Image 1 (tube, rainbow, N blue to C red):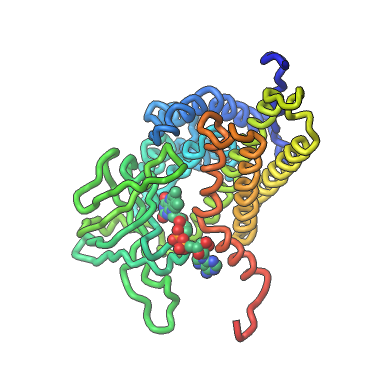
Image 2 (cartoon, helix red, strand yellow; image 1 turned 60 degrees about the vertical axis):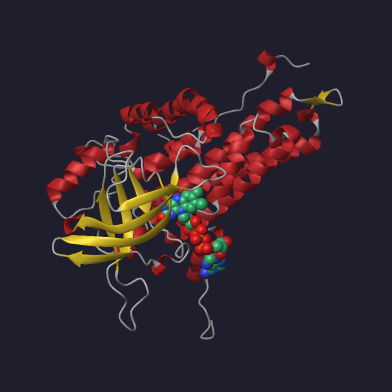
Length: 401
Ligand SMILES: Cc1cc2nc3c(=O)[nH]c(=O)nc-3n(C[C@H](O)[C@H](O)[C@H](O)COP(=O)(O)OP(=O)(O)OC[C@H]3O[C@@H](n4cnc5c(N)ncnc54)[C@H](O)[C@@H]3O)c2cc1C
């Protein structure tokens, strides 16, 4: 029988050339250590209870500056790019996906107000982890088709009055703000269906809903650490100065592109977790008087899993790098979201298979990686919608199409 001390721990990937720099390597090492020491024990304890990320953990993350990785230094951020943002997200998701997600609710989100002084103040709060939000795009009848958003914002003096329903708003109650996609006008004949959409910033206290919003939690099968909410807006009053950005739908699209690469990085973190857990388990578990890791079928499955993780990481690093260079990346962001999340759903399912019956229990972490990875092909735009985005940019439709 193999001794505990003889278990080989998995090799850890490092930042490869041409992306390598000593600063990136240090950031990656810090995030990896933090994930193993601070996040993983919390995930193992709270995920089975459907618990929320503790405030103390958020404060430690804020201490590392991870809510402002992409916020400029002038406003208290780390002044880094999409590459570092995704790198940290992969490390955090390796331990618990929701912790990798919460950093996306800052990074300057909810700060794009017209008044420069207020914008600067909100950016500082964002970078400090004191302005962590929720994004309310989806509705009961508008998911993939965001142009179908029906939540109404009617101008009344210096305010908007908001009425309607949102679905799937993650972190809504715990948030400092909710960024809401609303309809202020109907499209004129001949205009796109997305005409008349706008984004409003709802400021709020953490752990409460303001008058005019009622929240009902949605009972999910995974992605714990966050509570996800159905929201009812019933005459909520929002100052007109809280209209953010220039156009609701265009803003949402821009945000979704970066979010897609970040989702790819989270997917890679989850799939890597399955590979790493399997490397340990395959040495521990014995059948036919061998560690099951001796059997070629199992070894080859592991090899395929690991190769797919490396491939997806190389792709998301490439797309993040393109974003940092300022290239328009809508097609590539959709491609990497599609490819990395489908990979993660399959690789984590393979991880369950390699754990045998034990994989189908709550006694091993691989089931959490699988439940969380399963979501990644659905949220931030489903795989089918990513295929639509990519194919629409590759292949013109005929006049019949
Ligand atoms: C746990 C969780 C957290 C979420 N968090 C948030 C959040 O914080 N904020 C937020 O705004 N939203 C959030 N979402 C919503 C998420 O983005 C949507 O679920 C997603 O965009 C899909 O929309 P839908 O669920 O309405 O599915 P639908 O749009 O109803 O799609 C159902 C099926 O039809 C397919 N389909 C739809 N249209 C087409 C088409 N044109 N071509 C081919 N196939 C199509 C889809 O791919 C899918 O397979 C979250 C969702 C979940 C499950």
